[in-house]
Length: 289
Length: 289
Image 1 (cartoon, chains in turn red, orange):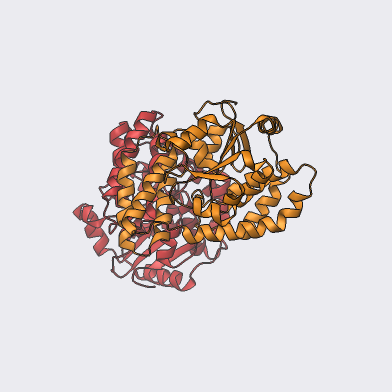
Image 2 (cartoon, chains in turn blue, purple; image 1 turned 90 degrees about the vertical axis):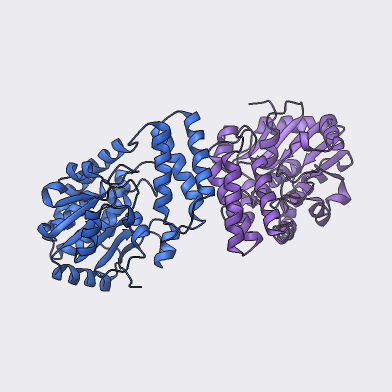
């Protein structure tokens, strides 16, 4: 998915939120904002939004010397999600249709996103309400059916994660997918609150399945930048599950069979691209409209 | 009042709204946004926000060839305000404390502002609700008292207007100020929906008082850019009434006696500067905190 001019106020707002999180030095805030604005002035909008996101957060790391401004926030998201997953376990574990419930929770957990939010923090009550709401929210039954069938037939599954915290619920879903055949993809380096190897270890994903990194600090998956083993895995897996907005934005033009996007539509530009409403839980097969 | 980094997402959003209003040509939208972003990257934030506003709308005029993209919107605002003023006249005209009611309506009419709004249009029901709400909204009685005393003693009053539409309610207030002693200031050229001589004529202000222009297309009053006769009038008037956000932002550091700011606080940055809440009706004497 390309970027739109509508993304510009959001890029600017996100840069300001992020640099303020990274340092209290207002001179650095101004220096970062000037560099971000200058980069935006020459950004190629044919590229997906996470390419600009990568640039913004690289500038912030360079100017603040803080390699991982969201480290504490990610750890807190993981702890919160582990707590909520425990509370909700009975709702998922004992249910007749456990797959769909786990799928719904994994979709809803995509709300734990510090990039798309105007405020800097994730609120426990809001996340819990979202998870509970997801158990009965509308869902494209045909798309879920196609995903289920593809998974039933698959010998290998690549599951591309999005955010810290959210990956706790990805783990609950992966547990139902016969994890031996699953490879999990995480970011290669910290960017916003996206899940890295450290987060995968913290929530026990590395004990469950093989975890590989995309080798990049882009908040999405730009295949041309990924290491060969990651690209090979993407090409060869029978099913690829792509979680979240950043992965959708960077992979939406891929046309391989068995590629499914799972996300919560968190901005108007994305909702328009998907042809859905803000806040919708989305299961979408690549190439299927 | 200086600009803040928090103004940047709003500048960018405002530029995008405005250029879309000025032309449907998406190539021009992109060209304008790149120029605005480049200007913002080197903007001196010590300057008040209307200086950047002036730059944004100059770029839009240059790139679109449209000298007055808000002309129709301004005419519609004037018509709407004339209609609502007629409907509300009985509430103001017959009242015992007519000055304060006229003041409240003039303050509330500052909501008719296409610059500070995310959406591009003014909604009749919303404006009417705002006007009615203003009749009983909290107001700084001490500041109103000081304004009243200053006006009682004044031989000359300069009344700096803000937006088209709003000036209909400014006229109602000016009618109660012994208009012979009042000079009305408008913008020297079209910028956003700010009132110009054309609007002053359309709502009958020119029949009531002398109207002068600030000679500028800045959505505010940068005295150093105003013609000598305007500056002289600003210096010599016993009372200066400065309406709206743009005039406040550009005149807030002036320290002359008898300068009163009348506005509705329409953004968080401004509300913080004024020490008030978003949406408050503000009567503030220059230099009084």
